[in-house]
Image 1 (cartoon, rainbow, N blue to C red):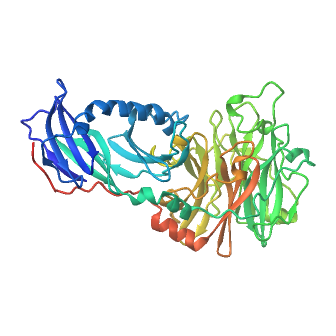
Image 2 (cartoon, helix red, strand yellow):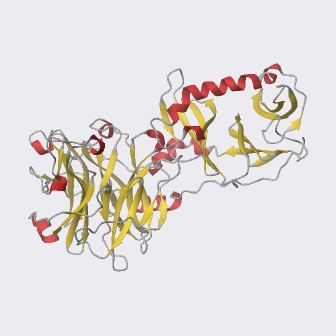
Image 3 (cartoon, rainbow, N blue to C red):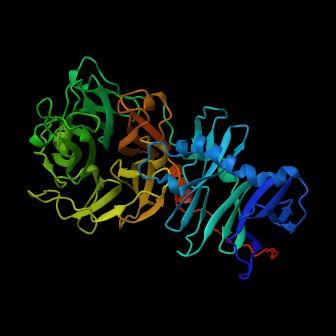
Length: 536
């Protein structure tokens, strides 16, 4: 960040307006009188940084202030609502389009979002023409400015492209500064995103709806997974055409090919809090992709028992977290002797995405769950919850700021896996700027204090980019509920489009190295270069 112009306090800025434009390889700064509109001062620069006073003789540059408003109106009318489609949480009044540039790939639209004295700059690529379509958007800010002191005046002026540089000009108090947006964050967008993503094998989808079984004829999705006795045991949410959810079972030796799949569910709704009400009583406020039942299971082995958390929904009241368990011996012998399920989240609150850490921390069990929009973490002395004992949400991990890919809501996906680098938590997220598309990320949590996030993926590790992620009951959804480690490979099991059971894989060591190397939320700092031009 370089200061290019400084105004003394004797000179008031109240009646001045600033414009930057580029013409015939020269960048111009025009200062106009707000009342008369007359250009009172002109500066020019070939590199966009070092400006010198000059005489303005070019007509195209002289009329730029008059066409600037037309340009801004055009960009706002065409692109503003495409940047934040359907978002109730991203305030479009705090979002400003800076400029747009034509490239071989499409049209790059730069914009910034200002909140809490901090400014985050983003970029989106659209197709060219009268009906622009989204090509890609950055999953994190291109640049971060601030935080600034509350009373400091920070005003955007313009964004120019000078050769391969994107130079943004800002008025900060009585000075004009230029910011060089890191070009590599823009040109390498697709490449950088791909290196983060897990591989989706050709075997996908692993499990599809089966018409011969009424209970799973409609959808099979959101699979829990646990690795025991040399097999991956997959517990998946299944729906018939009555939209009631139960849980099916399948196994795989290699994590990719299903070797066995039972024709009957292994867990069905039995309690009033998960049994559907009479027809006509269904509440559309909490349908959650179904009319009731047992939804989105997660499995964790703790000592000699396997605990299953799931979302219990009766079709009317708020979905809540239910807990049951089974002895490991019965589990492996397929004696489905489940303990009577109980509710562990309070009434009147939508609470989902619960899972249990496989080890105690300081003698206590650790439970992750989600109340919009955060991941919550509780420490409890026992998993035998007494009547009326509920999770409280003692700690929380929050979504990131509005410019990130995980800005609207996040939830724990698979129960955390223990690695030497920390607890690996796979989580799902929704972005403010892309409606209800789900993506998947990863965090490393401290082994001794799992409320502490050590690293967090800068970009999604799984996105809805395959047909089975989009061609189904709910397009654009990838929702993880299970993960296992087999030898040196990480397997993340997820529901695709609320219709299929899928998996994505990665070499564990490479994945952890990538997460540690780049997995943080820090951007280039707003460094100040004292190259100045004190002309007034």
